[in-house]
Length: 130
Image (tube, rainbow, N blue to C red; front, side, top):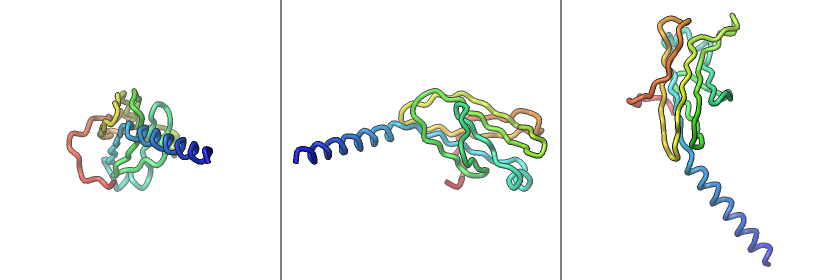
């Protein structure tokens, strides 16, 4: 009987700790909208790296939401051109996230593809699919 009581206490404590960890997470939202959507959207997807680790399934014209613990991060976004084995429109930004904070960055493409892109804070929240 004591074993079952001990198990339930341990289980409830670990669930509580997990919930506390989730509540401390910060949210990074990355908005990517292509300049020439009729050309860019069908040909390629943006590549997103957070602290050098590639994030799966980044998409155009939709909010890419990442839950991260508080800390310092380097965000890098670019467009791969697989035909020529090159990357274009590279944008890089260092951000600081605190507990329960939320930051929204917009990936802006330059007018010419060989110029670097930019990651800027997004003051206005457009109607993106979530």
